[in-house]
Length: 561
Image: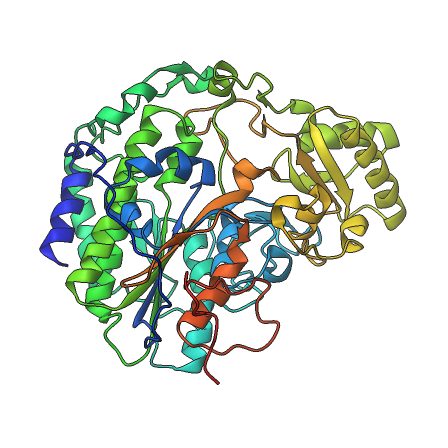
């Protein structure tokens, strides 16, 4: 690892204060953009996903960025990218970025779904588990891309030229799998207190070195991170019920508490550190073929869930995120790699309703316990006289896909579905509810994703084989957490723009920049990158379209015959 990257990461993990934000410099005169001259394909495609980085969060902090995000802001900026579908969760969102396909085609309808008739006792299926391995459960999965129905860009690049390398790293296994795909040269994610890889694969030296460094930090602990001056306005405690006060955290790291490491900016720093080590060891971006490196940064999501996204904690994280991305880009620059970058997010997020209520959104509430799968099953069971040896209604949360027990007959399922839909549609916290048949009969949406109906958004997440008997979607600002708990006060998963709208930034050295505020989609990323590297793909490979990154008369979407 280059000394610059190693020193910066070590300093962050040890709790060193962040550099104060600088005053805005006078903007230089900008000439009119000229057409981008044809260039060879970049040697490395770097895809960065920032988990739970909504377009709202990006807009709120974009003027404070001074490092990596500031650099990307000089490229092609699309502030209104859309994860167009309804299932705005980590696995579906990551599945769109490098496949160019909606969840309806990737098959990744949510983080978890249920198969009532599956032979194993665990009827719940995790999006990135190996169902063929008897050791796998949804809670402790054997990680695999077997459930992803389409290839990723990295796989397509390798198929065109086997000399290409496809590498992915994240704190989350599902991010690695959904961005890397089925054929990954190196894939690493966090588990417990270290980075791990696929079953049966020996970790490379880069991962072992990173784990050794992290072990030293965990053993000693570290002090709190400093509050940047610009974050003082957010430094206010808010009572979040049993979760206690949120809004004033500083990420002090007690010795031997790896979960505190994970839910902090240190997790992103370590992920970037490992990515840099993998670049060095695998010599990415230095071969004859284009390599693909996918890096998903998870700390924004972990912090958002734990304490919401409007406190001092998130402000500290935004400053640290900018620095971590800057270190990775500086590392690639120092190695003289010709690389192209895209940065986006898998979904957005909503703040804790206790703070939203204080900040001009009194309609923000926690979900009614009557909408939990268990409560719904009890009500419908009593209404229709239905029973089951196991749960009558299977579901992960008070929103999303719900499944009737396999023991119900088709006639019982039909009556139960009608009763459930009537109950859901009458509830004031429900925006919409659809049966499996209704979504199956809905055409796939097209056109501006901002204008899609709720039913069309749900259709983009619908898979005929995997989706539930009923899909329920909560109303705006209804948080699907009945009772907040330490580490879990806020979340995402709605059909609304605070969860669907994310930034999309493209950058390559020498590329003239521009900003396009019109809505685009994350499924546009893969075709845009494919064209940039000259990769020819079959018609219909992508759901999205290529975005022309040349602000002049040229067109980066033209692939030579």
